[in-house]
Image 1 (cartoon, one colour):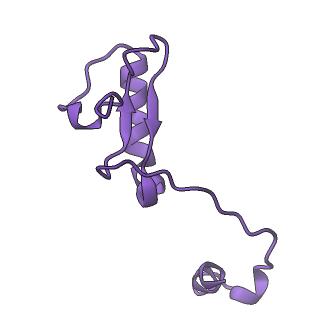
Image 2: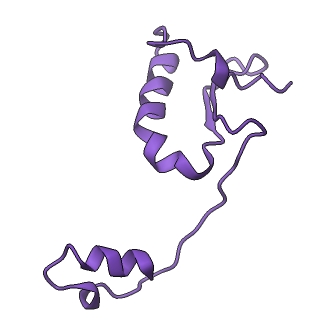
Length: 90
């Protein structure tokens, strides 16, 4: 409801023009250290993992998507991503 009301402040029709269609929510997976898992796990050759973004998945989505595309395409990541290694807990 708060999101609907806030969005209404930016629309000419206001919040009244935004009927509630569906309430959607999902789990927000977290890792023990709070960092996401992004990269290739050693045990699965054809997998690039991107999970565990917790409460910042929507905002990290574009950067994670670019990183996953680079990894899937065989390109070197633009920075050291070892802190995001999916095998760091195993």
